[in-house]
Length: 114
Image (cartoon, rainbow, N blue to C red; front, side, top):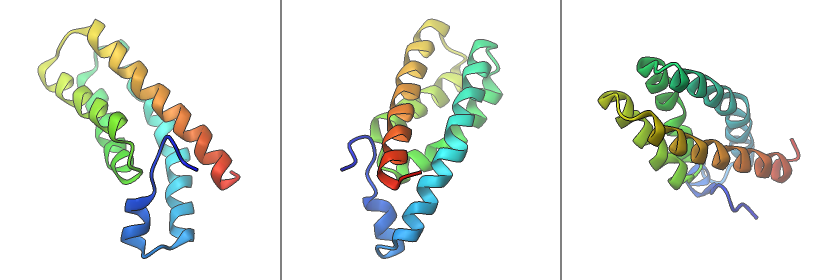
């Protein structure tokens, strides 16, 4: 049973297609962890454009997988890039996003036997 993610939107748009759900799960595992590493580097360098690009890229996937808290944190990161805000605050938000993504990735691997 998924605790870190929710496939209800995936099943709703795919009319309960399990193969589509597997494709979305695989896409998450392939792209999101890479973008998280890109975002980490960009935040450390205060590269606001690159941080925004990585956050923007993963935002729809987080929404689709029902990862609401991670989604809200990513929106916060995107806002931070627009305001060129405080660095200390953004590091804690990033840590939360990364932890949620790692937990979801572990759960997806287990649930889908990937």
